[in-house]
Image (cartoon, rainbow, N blue to C red; front, side, top):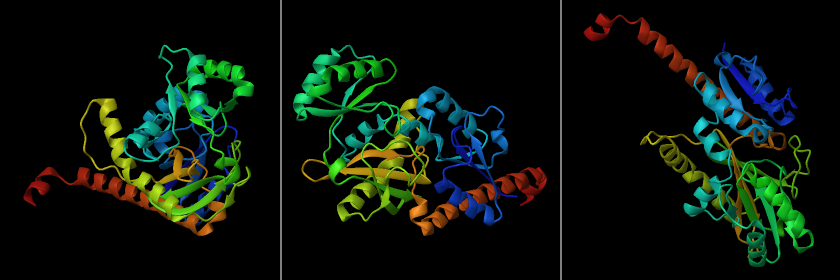
Length: 329
């Protein structure tokens, strides 16, 4: 029987209701579906079938453990998104790669953990360059974890916060985008590299199941779609090159687009759309707002399941065919 495992974390063992919608569609199609907590030591991932990473919403607190888990699990099952995407996207330094590839992102200053720098002096400089208001973020995090808006009124607290983050993470410093509060942040969802739908997120959204943190369905403009599609069009190549650098092994193997992705966009001070996040690890996909796209997501997962079944069957046949018969043919 075809099998699929949706991966979650300990605080959400029964899945986000948004994921449960897709989960139930697959079950109704006769697929053996289960949910599993990513760091549960009792899970046998070799029996998980196709493994779909979803609400691993504590990975930033166990970052290295999570990356080790990704490497280990991807050796014994089919992990979606693919481990190459997860390794690259789990740390927000990926924004550098996007920027270098010509994608318009929220301007970002970086203070690295191993960099010898006067943090207070550097923050003063960045504040002056950004109209006196910036946002501090850790390089590994989700939702508002570790995020602090800093201006002149709380500057000393901001310096202390930055120093605290730098004990564990590299530090991102971005200009405060007023459009986040006036126009909102738009999350554009992609399945198999194709744009499906969008939702508007609340400013500095807290961690909550999909649809319960102030999100709502929303239309998008042509320039927003163009930016998101341009981003998705280069991700596979960027990630492949990143893997080559990381491993030291040149590999030009085709990397298919991510099963799922979310491109989060805001408007800068000139009203130009810019990417604030690209989510390939554990984004909410707002399927409950768009039930037809929940079916599309289920279709895509089912296709992967059937493909892996065919490949497994082909391997069995290959083993069973006697060597002499293969030679005769």
